[in-house]
Image 1 (tube, rainbow, N blue to C red):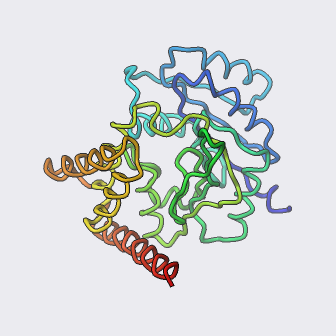
Image 2 (cartoon, rainbow, N blue to C red):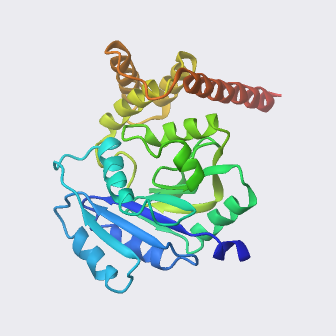
Length: 297
């Protein structure tokens, strides 16, 4: 594929206390059929052997670099993660590249994962943000995590440089991996994931901060991204019935949204961007109802 030699990508990975998983991630990247030109691993004050594991591989792969930041030991999603990402990005932003990747350090990827994403970018000049689909392990084996078609997984997200520049990068706040897509779509870019390009999430979502806080956070994110009440109602009911813990998950999400609304927490999108997002969510409801009607016929 001639287009592969014409494009290069850089990876930035914020990491903290990932000694259990990071070696698997590193092996996945050094085994890629199309390797990154630079991989910046930002160690966010790990208290385990994460930096030592990185250093061991860095000696044999000079395109891997390790830098360290300082912050408190409390694990939080969103802002601290993207602050660490931005810290790493500052060190490479002036390097020539075509795509930027935000990569978590608890993943296992197929060897051609990035080759396939670059091919998709080459085939669609409007594609701005993309990923594969991620799988998590349960008692029933590995299963893909359902995502709306326009969503790219934040754990391993690839962004075209021009798109990244236009949206102003990733905002250091909870919900950054939805906000970037809203902003990209409002600027004419397509965002999506590819279900035939899997990667494996070795650490179940929410295990770092706990399921209760994760559900509250999702409610706060929904408010920050300008979501409407109709979709929120469907989402809360769905999480009450099928989320974990049963019933409580939906109640906690509603609490997170209500708390953000009552305290007038600042929304992180413009009114036009919020309107665009509401339209997308309402379309999802409409499509879901159509599917239900079709199944009953």
